[in-house]
Length: 122
Image 1 (cartoon, rainbow, N blue to C red):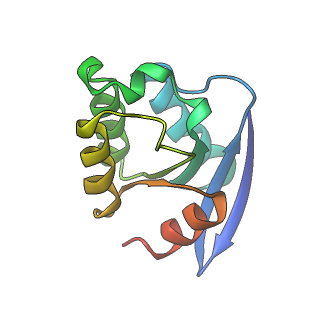
Image 2 (image 1 turned 90 degrees about the horizontal axis):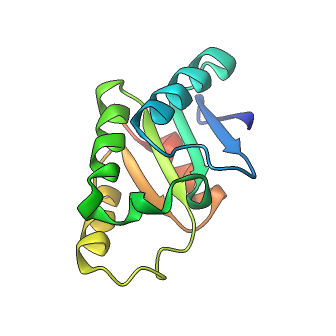
């Protein structure tokens, strides 16, 4: 796992890259939050959707809710980058829509959009 620190609009953002799965469970999400803070002093994190367990996108597993709640509890913001049109679930589409209209969790198509959104989030 690699973390690149970007500063945009005076805000530090950690862009995490990895060829491997980074978040498979709640503990891994907590580890990522801690690592981003201690290695890059960032509480705003960008990851690609391939770094998440596929079960994250099946809302019935409750994994997405449990993981994202940790980001909110620890006052960290997360942008997940990728093509989400491959998922047919209406509830997932609604979840993504609601998240994108909030201030903490975002699902965006590109890394650049994710960095910009996190730099402007309140």
